[in-house]
Length: 371
Image (cartoon, rainbow, N blue to C red; front, side, top):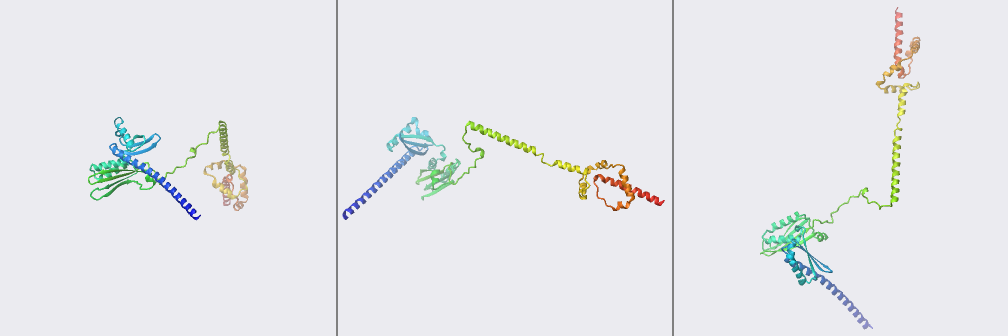
């Protein structure tokens, strides 16, 4: 029994190991398939760069479709790629199908919108300038300036090789904003490479350009709140409901207007102007029981232009002063000793007349005594 179990265990282990090996082979087969496909695309790209170098190779895009393989070629001058009557593009299509085993290839040629913002085209131009004898510093600075003048957010040019002597070195020219790693580099940085063949050796040229429309993660735009008027309105209601709503709005507006009119009509009745008029008329008929302080205050408050009224009110009846004079003559001492309360404005002028009348009998008495 033990031997049978051991044999069974060994068999199961061998079976699991076989499954793992099959899975590994399948994974390796799929990985090999991707690797071979990418190698074929890289070889196609190098072939087209060498074949379409004069037209300004700007990029390549290969897509599989049910009808075959679509090859999109981006160039600076598409006329050179197409050729007379399409002869050049026909020969390219035949070479791609035979040499690279693409099924029914269809080539589309597109023109670059701005060649100065295409990294591959600028790298090839820089390599051609070095081959023509330009100094590497002059060529690098002019390339960077040309790229930045066309609106790029950042640019970096790397030239490496035997630049000035037998020793290899690398020179970098950069300006603007550059990303070296992360998702931002994969999304916004475009890279191109070209090689310049000189007598000392081959010089590699790498150009990196940041897309002018790149929006980095740290760039935030704050959207202002929408005003109340711009809030999207509710869905349109039925015509009957809309009419009722309008009628209610009109009623509410009329009620508000009536309230405003009522408030405006009641406003003039509130001030106490009538009472002020009555108070102004009080000095004409003062009461005898008014205190002395109040009368003094009234005299101070009376303005200067009201003095002429005293003449009209000061005209007393004829018999009144005589009665007063007799009382004074009979008892002059009492008139001096008694302190009468101050009288209102209407009786003030009468005092002056009484004093004058008092002085006259005193003078007459002195004359009689002297005689």
